[in-house]
Image (cartoon, rainbow, N blue to C red; front, side, top):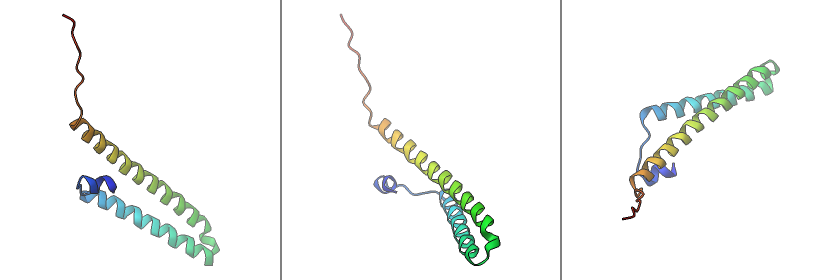
Length: 89
């Protein structure tokens, strides 16, 4: 978010959709965990949902980090000074 703020970038609609999907999966995992406290049969489901939620979060975070990395590299290229070589006469 800091890079986006600094360069005045806006996430596109697909970024927002992926983040919303991740949030829904996290919420479903949380609800399953809470229900498993009252209904012991849901313990396995809560564990599976927790695993899915963690994998989804890690994937989403990895994609976001990669996007920021690419953006920073592109910004560095714009200000990069080309190397000069000296020739002997």
